[in-house]
Length: 250
Ligand SMILES: Nc1nc2c(ncn2[C@@H]2O[C@H](COP(=O)(O)OP(=O)(O)OP(=O)(O)O)[C@@H](O)[C@H]2O)c(=O)[nH]1
Ligand SMILES: [Mg+2]
Image 1 (spheres, rainbow, N blue to C red):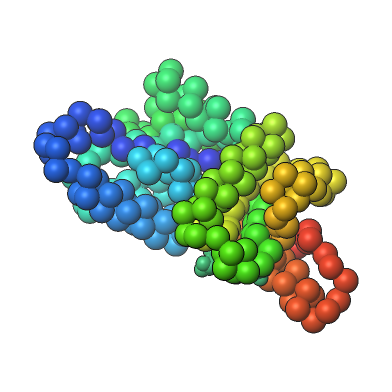
Image 2 (cartoon, rainbow, N blue to C red):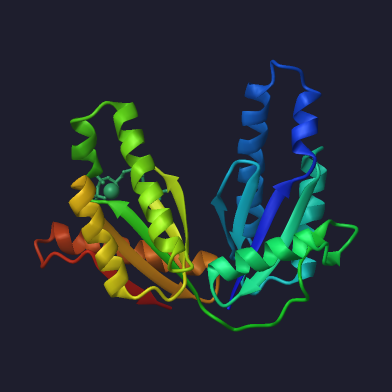
């Protein structure tokens, strides 16, 4: 079972209009500081936030109770004038957790009315979270041959293919910056990942390295995934057999 919390700014659209048309710089600063504070408060509780659309953030919150969410909501309310809703969803797969969260919100199933927290009553689970950290092999040398915006365009294509491929496996892919992607995964078989790497190699001439991490919390799973990725690099740089996919569990 995986638990996701989807955080959204409430009443954002109408509020942006009150700022007049010279507002974009203010909205960008607000979104960046909101993401920073959400990552800060959730990572302190061993969760990991994923940058989704800028007014909506996904967090892997396995093991986190409603009272922890209340504590974070109270801290956020002190720092931001805008309201935020939190919707907690649990499911057998990340996609199902995301859908269950959405359904609870639409049907107004409330966990804590005062703090605007939605979701079905939480089940205690000792289940593991799996995160895949994907990174372009040798992006520095690819970048040397292209202009900055051409690289951005390539990264967007890779992200699009990744999102589509892994959504079919009930998994959710996010762009984390630079040439890095993370996928909240649902027991995706190594063979499927290898197939994805082949497709990307065929279509874009790009190789990905892929670290897989499994642990009880989102933050630990990401740590293990990044450790796996770093190990792949280490093996490559020491001239050992080329390995593109590696898994570590803690
Ligand atoms: N989000 C995130 N960004 C990273 C991480 N490690 C490096 N980056 C960024 O990713 C970009 C590319 O770095 P690398 O992937 O190390 O460069 P590379 O040439 O592709 O080297 P290899 O991946 O080792 O083949 C840089 O802009 C880094 O700042 C990470 O763990 N997470
Ligand atoms: Mg790279």
